[in-house]
Image 1 (cartoon, rainbow, N blue to C red):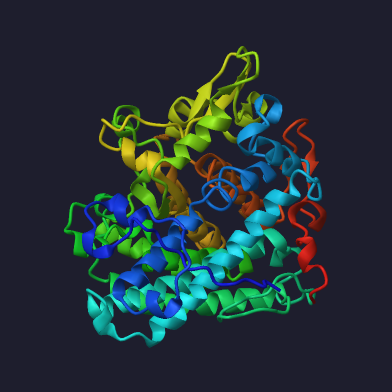
Image 2: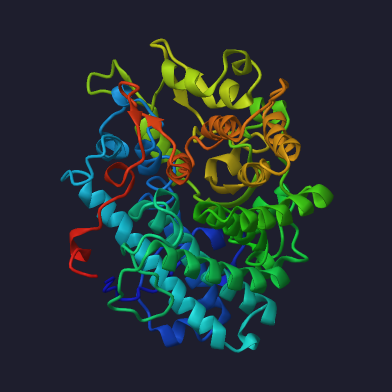
Length: 505
C-alpha cells in the first residue's frame, strides 16, 4: 500500500531569511528533490517543508477543486450539469454525479486525488518525525516554532486521512460504530511506510482522534497568545522573520484542530464528545469574538467579502489559481461563443433549500447566487473580486475548509434532545449572521435536523461538506437531473479503491 518515495517540497524562490510578503511564504510549490538531512538541518528547511505541504493541499487535485467545489460537491448533487462545460474538470464532475465511479474519464482524476493525498500524508509523517527530534535552536522562535511545526504536521495527516475515510469508506451510521469489520483504507502515521494493511472505519477514526488530540495539546501552547481576529488570521504586515508565525487562519491552528475534532466525533456518532469540543470554541467565541458568525451586508456587496471570511477558522491560500479555475468552468462559452457555460443550480434545487420569503433576506442567496435567464442560478462564491476593495484579495485567494457556522450546527444537533432552546439559539446565530430575520423553530429532532441540513446546503455550497452530511445522517438527497430520491448506500456514497490497491487487505 502506498509505495511512495518521499518527495521534499521546496521552492527555489523560498528562503525564509529573505521573505518580504505573505505571498513569499505561502506561495511554495513542490519542485526539487534535496537530501532530507540537508533540508532538516535548518529552521528554513522545516518551514519550506511545511509550506510545501499547504501549497500541495491547495492544488486542483485536492482542496483547490476536487475536495471542495469540484468532485465532492458534484457527487453530492449540488449542481445541475446541463450548462456545465467538459473543460475545467466538468467532465469528471458529471461522471461522479452519475455515480459512474469506474468511468475511464473519471478514474484518472480520482487516482490522482488519491495519490496526491497519500503523498501529503508521507510528507507530514516525515516532517513530524524530524520535528520531534529537532534541536529547538534551529528555529527563529525556538521551542514555540518547533512545536508549531510538529503539531500542524500531526494534525494535517489526520485531517487528510479523515477526508479519505469519508470518501472511500461508509459512514459509521450505516451499520453502527464498531459494528463493521470490513476494511477499507489504512491509517499511516510513520515514515517510511511502504505497505500498509487496510483497516476498519473504527480503527481509522480512533487513530484520527488520537492524532488530533496530540496536535491539540501541542498547538494549545502555540496559539494561546496568537492574534486570532479575522484580520490577523488572514492578513499581516509583520517583519519577514515573524511572518511564518502569524496569519494562523491559513494554518491548522489550535482552534482548527478543535473544530476538526468536533467534526470527527460527530461523524463517528459520538455526539457528547462532539458537543464538548464545539463548546470549547463557542465559549472562546463568546468572550473573544474571534470567529464572528456575522458580517455586514455592505462588506459583501461593496467590499468583496464574497466568502464571508470572518468565521473561517481554517482555510488554504491559493494566490491566483483559484479564481482561474472558477473562470474556466463557471464563466465560459461553448465553441461557437454563443452559449454560456457554468455550474448551474436549477430553480428546483434552489427552491428546495431556500424558502421563498427567506430568499429576499438571506445574503447567501442575494449575493452568492446569480440568477440567469434560463431559470438557473450561477454560484459566485469563487468569482473573482476586485482587489481594490477591502476584502477582495482575501476572498480571491482563500479556500474555506472549516467555519464557525459548522461548529454551531454540530453543537445544535448534539444538544437538541436535552436542550432544544439552546439548539435553536445556535442555528439562529448562523441564520442571523447571514441576514435572516425570520424566526426558526423545530418541534422534533427530525424536523430540526432537516432545518440544519437546509441551512448547511446554503452555507457549504462550494466547500465540499454537504455529501458527508447526507452520508453521516443516512439522509436521502436528490438526483441533479430528475429530482429522484437517492438513499445513501455503499454503491453511491463510497468510492472504489484504485486498482493498484485492490490486492491489499
